[in-house]
View 1 (cartoon, rainbow, N blue to C red):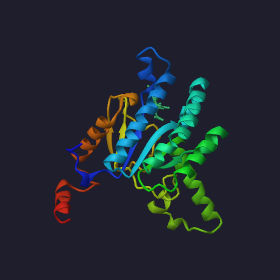
View 2 (spheres, helix red, strand yellow):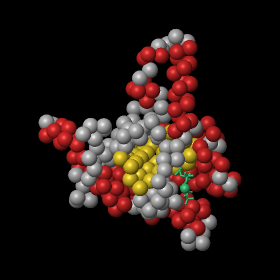
View 3 (cartoon, rainbow, N blue to C red):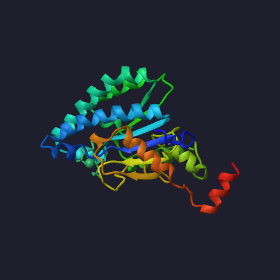
Length: 249
Ligand code: IPE
Ligand code: IPE
Ligand code: MG
């Protein structure tokens, strides 16, 4: 922790929490056991992110494609979400954490939607870490959705096609008002994006670790941030330009 440069922290970290199922199966347990242990990691990592001073943390909890998993796993996960979300609200409030959900929430069972709405409302006044949970989320869904909204605005004459720029487009994504993640972490040794924040990750630093999500803790988060801080972010420029920009700051 003392090696972290607090002046160069990512404002927004996004995490693909992967490897719960394998983690459980490797010890002869049911996949669902891994998801339950994954909640422990969520708690620890959220606390650590708040403590370090991260402003936004987005966690990929369930993708649109995950609806195609065996029905027992899907219902088990939904039950886990409902139980956990309600239970965590007092701790979120104690830590001044504001909760938000992104994704196609209309697909969720009613009891899950109620739990989500309640916890969002109950934490709305908090001013600390913004915790964004991607649930029933897929980035292509989000992008297509934004295209539809913009097309309708053009159709009724409220928008000219020329007015559609990157800013207008991103304001019609589910992450409206949230800065793009500077750092994206994926656990469990898979090297892919799996339909997560495709627009927003355009210039994010990507960090992959073999650690399975149920084993991921604060030291792993710090390691990822340290790795991020060791990189030069060039945004298409040359290294010499970046050095000069830094000097002129
Ligand atoms: C991530 O763990 C959690 C969800 C996708 C809900 P997985 O369930 O994908 O675990 P593995 O990748 O099969 O090990
Ligand atoms: C991505 O993990 C989605 C979440 C972590 C919620 P998956 O395990 O579903 O991704 P794939 O299928 O390996 O790409
Ligand atoms: Mg997986």
